[in-house]
Length: 475
Image (tube, one colour):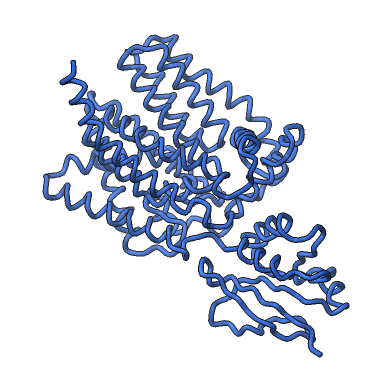
C-alpha cells in the first residue's frame, strides 16, 4: 500500500510542477495593468445592487448574468475594487485549468499527452490573457473542460454522479457566456450517441443544459435587440491575418495585432494536428479524440461562417477561447505520435512560441492602456476648476471615465474635445489635462486648445502611445 502511494506521489509531481509554473505566471503582475475596457463593464455591473443588475446587463453586455453575479459577491466578500482582487477568480480558474487539461488529455490519449497539453496550457499567451482579465472567459473555459472530463468518466464508469456533474458544468458555462454553446452542443451530441451509457443518463446530461440555454434565451434576444451592432468592428472582420490568429488561438497574445512568423508557425502546427487527428479518429477506438475534434471544429466553423458569410464581426481568437483546452489536447496527442526527435523538436518549438508570447504579455508594453496612471497623475496635481479633455478611442475613454469617477473630485469634468460642453468649459481659462493616443514621435503641442501652451507632457511605459499633457492658458 505504501509503495503504491509513493508511486502515485511520484507520478503526480510533474503535473503539480506545471501547475506551480502556471500559478506563478497567472498571479505575477495580476494587478499591474489598468483595467481593460471590457473589464470596466464587468466592474460597473458587479457594483450594481442585485435588483438593478439584470436591467443594466440587458443594455451593457451580450452575456448572461452568471459571471457578474459571482463578481458582485466576490467584491462584496473582499470589500475591494482593486484590479488584482477583481482578476483573482479568473487567475484561480486558470490555475485549476492545468490539472483539468492534464486529466482530459490523459483520458483521451494517455498520461504523456496529458502532461504535454497541460504544459502547453501553462505557457499559452491566450490562457494567460484571460487568466488575468476580470471577464467570464476563463471560468467558462474551466467549466467546459470539466464537462468534457465528466462525459468521458460517465461513459467509462457508467456513473450517474459524473453525468450529473457534467450537466451542471455545462449549465455553469452557458450561464457565463452564450458562445459556450458552440462547445456544449457538440459535447451533448457526442453524449447522446454513446450507446454504452444508459439512455436516462445521456438524457440528463443533455436536457439540463438545454433547459438552462432556453432560460437564458429571452435575455439574449433582448440584448441583441437593444444593441444589435455590438461586435468587434475591424478587430473581428474576416481577413487572412485574423484567420491565422483564430487558428493559432492558444498562441495569440494581448500585445500584438500583427501576424508574424511565430503566429503563422503556431497556426500551421495546429492545422496539421487537426488534420492528423481527423485521420486518426476514424478508428472506432478513438471516440474521445473525435469528441475533441468536434469541440474544436464546431466553434472554428461557427466563427468563420458568421464572419465570412453573415458579416458578423467575430473573427477573433476571443471566440475560440472556449475551444482552447481541446485544441491543446489534440496538439499534444499529435506531438506524441511523432518520432522521438521530431516530437522533441516540435514540442520545443511550441513551448518557445508560447514563452515568447507570455514574456511579451508580462512586459510593460504588454499591459492595457495606463488610464489608471493618467488619472492618478491628474489626481495628485488637481486644482479646483481643472478640466480633463480627451479625443481617444472608446478603449481609452471608457476606462478613463471609470478611474476618474473613482479618483477625481465629484463632478470633475472629463469631456470629449468635440463636445460643446468642452468649449464652454474652456471659456474661463482653466488648466486643461489632455489625454490622447498618439505616436511617440508626435509633437507635444499638437492639438492644444486655442490660447493654450504646453506645461508639460508625460508618456507611460506601459502604453507609450498614451500621452498626458498639462495645457496652461497663455498669459
